[in-house]
Length: 71
Image (cartoon, rainbow, N blue to C red):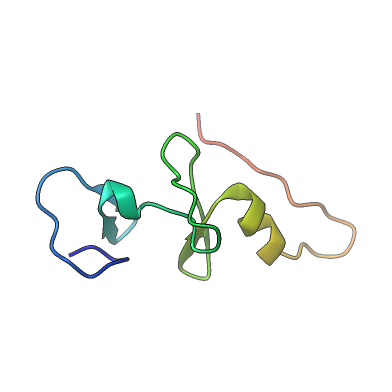
C-alpha cells in the first residue's frame, strides 16, 4: 500500500523507513516536488525537500541547521 495515496503498489516502489510509495508519490509534503535524485528529509514522520525541512527545524540557540549526506 502506498503511504501517500493509499492505493496498492505493483512493480517499482520507493521504500522510506517503514513507508512505501509509488515513484510518482515520492514528493515533498509541502510543495509536491518529486524527490527522486534530490533526497528527502523526515520531519515529524512527513517527508520534505531540503528547503521545506529546513523551515520546520529550529536548532538550539547558537547552532545552525546543517545538511549531512550519507557516504
